[in-house]
Amino acid sequence: MSLPNFYLDGKVVIITGASGGVGKALSLGFTEAGASVVLAARRPAPLQAVADEIMSHGRKALAVPTDITKNTQVSEMVQRSLKEFGRIDVLVNCAGGGVREATLDITEESWDNMVDFNLKSVFLCSQMVGRVMVEQENGSIINFATAGAQVPVPGYSHYTAAKAGVIHFTRVLAAEWGRYNVRVNCISPGLIDDDLGRSIGPSFEKGARSTALGRAAQPEDILPVAMFLASDAASYVTGVIINVNGGPV
Image (cartoon, rainbow, N blue to C red; front, side, top):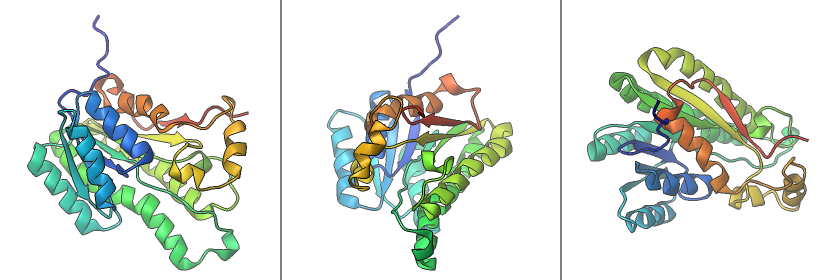
């Protein structure tokens, strides 16, 4: 019996939100495991900086500045990926983020923006890349939710509602596309020690101490789980939500 293949040699991976935080950690880690990556985010300069860092190690990366809430830009990103690499094996819908707002203070515009960024973007990218994967009859999509999508977090109703939608969207896609050998799974992180996590202010340290492990996650803590789901070692895993949250207490 041979050991399962946890490496990503020869795979082409699209990663959204790749300019920093978890997205950057995944981009660097996936290329070290043998993948070629397409990096998508809205900020061109930091996105290109990640691509340059990857290419400085002799690995392949393509930076495509993209607003993933816009269908035309997502389509362009996918077409550039296919032109550059000829196929797409893995999509990581990592982009997302929220701000604290009391529900009574949320405007319609704020609600729409939060849902567009965290849920509509996952739909657009998954649909566009899904067409490619269905035709290939192979692929892995990894979505990102949040711990707050499964337990109530006051002050983040729009953000957590959108992320809860990502969880169920994951399960539906897994059921629809399994016949084409396209796997769809979801990672649900807890508090992460990056710019987004630190943006919550003084409550960050309290939240970090409240986990069973007594600390927030580093972006690199998410990498092994994502690599497993992207790899052939997870060929019989679909429709699951994996919590990477330091443990409940």
